[in-house]
Length: 287
Image 1 (cartoon, one colour):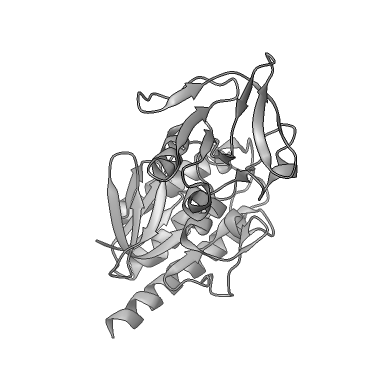
Image 2 (tube, one colour):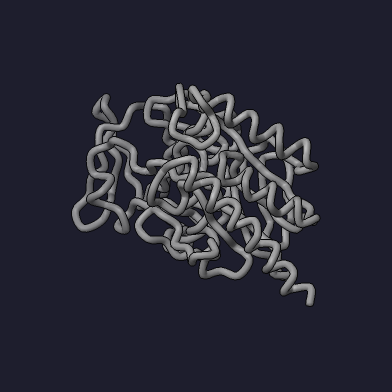
């Protein structure tokens, strides 16, 4: 059991971990994949770095700093988040399940929409982005999960015992390692239907009749975790109060996941606020 679980090891997540750990709380940071910060060749508008610093170096320095303070920083992809009967939060990875008294989402947001004709036209009418949220509406029906990584398989697992038929679509990308589900790797041309989605058309001219498609490309972003928990969104951004709290007690968000100015300075401030607010929330539970 951790006091604080943080999803994301960018400047927001690491800043949150530093403030929570300095308050003598147990802190776990989960991260995976390449951070947006790592892609920055040079950051020369951040306080204290005369001549600038590479995003990769700043990112690695942050993780090292957290670890030196005693923060547990683990390179595992968070796949699912739930609230348990004890009102604590459980974060599942491919290998483990972690429980925390509070949760901070600092993963940023990814662009969810694939560049396939018909995606926007059928959103809410056969196209979904959350198996936990919408799986119920496809009971005993034929659905597909679009994606080829661990997150796609996790969404498939959520749907497995609800839907009638389930297939993984990779849209031309390599197949994920699974013997559990049928996988179709053909490139998709478009989604079609009348009022609702009714089939997928592939570039080779073949078709697959489906009642629904769940988009799960790449890794989960902040909005994905928010939807699973019922956290309020403003578009694709997590809606937060000034103290970085969300509408769900014990859940906080910071950094790019909240939208606004996508800069390191904002992420560091919001991370600090989220870390302090999480500590305050835990104290309120203990009293």
